[in-house]
Image 1: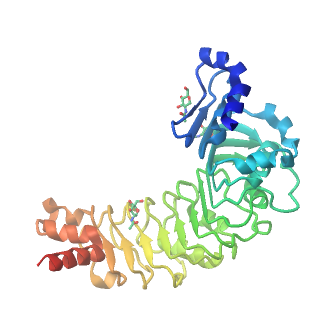
Image 2: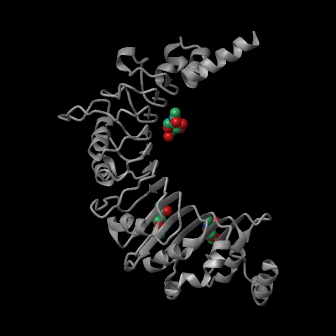
Length: 363
Ligand SMILES: *[C@@H]1O[C@H](CO)[C@@H](O)[C@H](O)[C@H]1NC(C)=O
Ligand SMILES: *[C@@H]1O[C@H](CO)[C@@H](O)[C@H](O)[C@H]1NC(C)=O
Ligand SMILES: *[C@@H]1O[C@H](CO)[C@@H](O)[C@H](O)[C@H]1NC(C)=O
C-alpha cells in the first residue's frame, strides 16, 4: 500500500529518471540503498527510493548542502510517525559541505528512528551551531564513525554532538580528524563507551593523545585502537592512559614507528591492571620495548625487525605471542626454525593447544 502510494507520488519524476543517470540505487531486497549526487544538477528526489532501506549511504558529490538549510526549522513532530516506521539502521553521509544547523536538524529529525550506526565521511561542517537542545533529542546510536570530518566549531565538536545523542553509545571511531583537542570541561562522560578507535590520525602522537583522552570521560573503555597515530613509545601511551584514568583491556599500537627504549627522562609508568592484550605489530621494532605491562596474556610482535628470538626475561609472561614476519624467523637467516615452529608461533599457544587437543581426539 505504502509502496503504491510512493510510486504514484513519484510517477511525475519517472520521465526525468529515464533521461538522467539515476543517483540512487537500491538492491532487490530493499536492504541497501546508495546515492551519489555527483551530477551538476542532481535529482535529489531520487533519495525517496531509500525510504524502506535498512542501510543508506548518501554522498553529496562534494557539493554544498546550504540550499537545504531552510528545512532545518521543520518541527520533527510533524513527521515523527513516518520516521518511527523507517527500517533505517545504518546511515552514511559523506562528501559534502553541510551547515551545522542542517546536520543537527537531521539528528533531531531521526530522534524517533531506529538508527543505530551513523558514519560521517569527508564532510566539512560549516556555520554556527544551533543552541544546545534541552535534552538529547537525536537517535540512540550504538556506533558513531567519523572519517575526515572538519568542524567550524574546532575541538568543541564532540561535546556539541554529544548533546544531541541519547546515551548508550558503545563504539566511537574518529579517523583523519581535524581536531582531537577536546575542551575537557565541556565534554560529558561516555558511560557506556567500550570501544574507542583513534587510528589513522598520523599527527596525534602522545601529546595529542593526552589531550584527546579527557580524564574520567571514558570510564567503561575496554578497547583502545591507536594504529597509525604517530605514537613513539609504549611508555608515553602508558603515561597518557594513566593521566586520563583510562583502563583498556585491549590496546592496539600497531603501525606506529615505535622506539624500544623509553623516552629519555620519562618516569616509569604503571600500566592499567586490566590490560591483557597489546598489539605491537608492524612497529619497526628491532628489540622488545622496555617497560611492557607485566600481566599481559597476549602480545603481538609480528612484522617487526627482531633479529633474534626474544629471551624469556625480555618478555612479559604471555600465553599468546605472535612473532611471525620477523627477520630471525626467515629460514634464509636462521635456517633452524622449522615450519612446525613457525606454525606454532603464528597460531599462538592457544591455537597450538587446540591442535594438540584435536590430534589427541583423533588418536
Ligand atoms: C560517485 O560518483 C563519482 C562520479 O561518477 C565517482 O567518481 C565516485 O567514485 C562515486 N562515489 C562512490 C562512493 O561511489
Ligand atoms: C577530506 O574531505 C574533504 C571534503 O570535506 C575532501 O575535499 C578531501 O579530499 C578529503 N580528503 C581525503 C584524504 O579524502
Ligand atoms: C595486530 O594488528 C595487526 C595490524 O593492525 C593485525 O593485522 C593483527 O590481527 C592484530 N593482532 C591481533 C592479535 O589482533
